[in-house]
Amino acid sequence: MSQTPRFRTILSCTLLVVSLGAVATACGEPDTHPLSATPFDAAEQISFNTPHSGGKKVDPDKPLEVTTKDDSGRITDVTVIDGSGHFLAGELSADGSRWRSTAPLSAGAKYTVKVSTEDSDGSPGSRTLTFETAPAKRLLTVAFGPKAGTYGVGQPITADLSLPVKDKAARQVVERALKVDSQPSVEGAWHWVDDKKLHFRPKEFWPSGATVSASSNLQGVKVSNKLYGGSSKGLKLTIGDRIEAITDAASHQMTVLRNGEVINTIPVTTGKPGFSTRNGIKVVLAKEYFVRMRGTSIGIAEGSSESYDLPVYYATRVTWSGEYVHAAPWSVGSQGAANVSHGCTGMSTSNAQWFFNTVREGDVVKVVNSAGNEMDPFGNGFGDWNLDWDKWRTGSALVAGGGTGAVTNPVDTARLRPQV
Image (cartoon, rainbow, N blue to C red; front, side, top):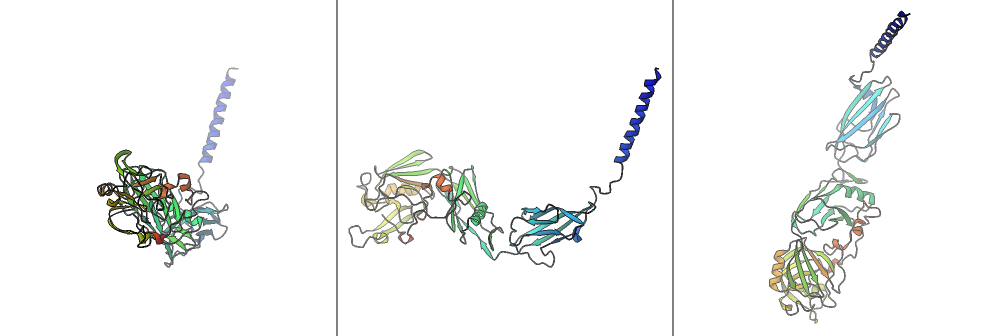
């Protein structure tokens, strides 16, 4: 009786060994399609709709297609990359018979196409080819502004396009390719001023001491039918101290702040009734040591009681229509007490010299409590900051309903003349 269990145990072990041996034999069968097999040349298996011999260049307006020649195999993967390392998006059919690009080709670019296949037996194949696209006949380039240098915290970045772009989808292509980088980083957005001009500004003024760069990634990119991006020069700026000059037309005083601290208070005169200075935020456009200002340039008849012809010094321009902060020695008696100018902000010669030497392009000049109109956002200088952030963002083509390019309160450029 005691031998029976032992016999069963030995028999069970024997069966287990036999079973394991069967498994080992099955796993040891030779693999007819090893993963390490060298892929065969798939040249006879697939075809391309692009010329890849003879040096002929491909029309970038046509999609790239890779197809199988018969039912003997299928395409398993396609990778297309240009000379800059950018991948071309595409879609492979469910049955593996066709791959087609879903993004436009770039113009004047060299591409490398790598295709993986397998035949009816599952053996892997591959094929690599290169081709070049023809250069574009119409190029869209970008000129960034202002010129390189150091600017105030209110300076917008401008982008002037070589050709008009009206279609919203095309504007989205352009806007995505225009890059602005800031250190430290800021939240900002582009705003389409019109069909050929964009402005970029941050949500708040630039941080003092920031470095800002603007660049375009449009080269070779399809913007619209037959229109491609061209090469454009980038821009680098630095931002200086935060200088803000706030003029209260009611108290006839200008308060100048540097980085939030008051550094000067100046008695001034602003525009009298009928010539009231514009309210709102302006940005220093230029500094001109000497300007000849004539009443006839703003429509005042020569010989009338309002006529003037004056040499003006230390003139800091804030609008293209001729509004300045400048020396006005003839009105010193009214400065700090009354508004007697034709729209400019006047001060003593010594104060104007100090202001001229203190501010730079891009610094902020704000007027409050004037009877004048509001500063135009566009067309008469940089009034960009007079749009709140939500309104500003509606000018972006990447925001729903934005990028219409309508100019708010366009200015009559025929009247862009100095005034005192």
